[in-house]
Image 1 (cartoon, rainbow, N blue to C red):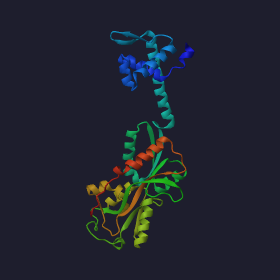
Image 2 (image 1 turned 90 degrees about the vertical axis):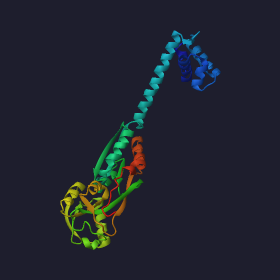
Image 3 (image 1 turned 135 degrees about the horizontal axis):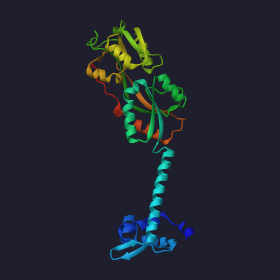
Image 4 (image 1 turned 120 degrees about the horizontal axis):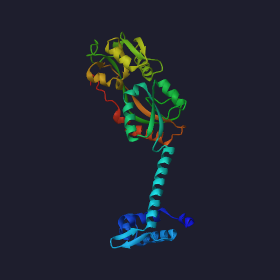
Length: 311
């Protein structure tokens, strides 16, 4: 008998379970979306393999015999084992669990955590490792295959990447609300020649964009202190130690509450783009691919929408 039981199929056991649940072949057939003869055939084949009657007809319908109860329990164990196996394979493949390494330039830290939080709610079993650094650091991590996904404003020139646009990134010149140029309109770059600029450190994408602006406008301002933190720059500008060129996304809150203003300078804002990207030659496991797809699809709704002072 044991040898014959190895030929049992899930269809046969499902037919038995459906009849046990509904009490009739007719109802079981409707539940399984099969014909009555098909269900009867499955049951007959199962009883032949068991070599024992599995069902007893009564006035209240069909009920399981002791052998039928044993077979129904076998059905439950098999379905549970298959479900457990599916879950385990999902974990191994990364479809339901796993890790993803995401890097973002420091300017993006004002919205990236909200994206990660949304992704984690949708995929609670995927562990996200988030690294924040300046552009040079994030690009080097991408070169070294340490990141699955990177969020930055400009793709690296020396790496072939798959990139997805997630939104615009306007850059502005900010000043304290008490700055003498705060209420001026139609300023030219030359009007800032005597101002002190507080800047990001060399290697920062914001610093490079600022220097490009200076070259294009032939502006040669006084460079004051250098900082590796947007937060320190913002607080220093609020304290009226100078003005700064920053992404409007980093100062959206301060612009909203009036602690900072944007200067109305011709040619500003300088608008760049935010991208999410991956190395083309890096194999992404399912969790990382899911993260890339999610960010490409959903990130735009989490970008700050700063209100510029001269809008």
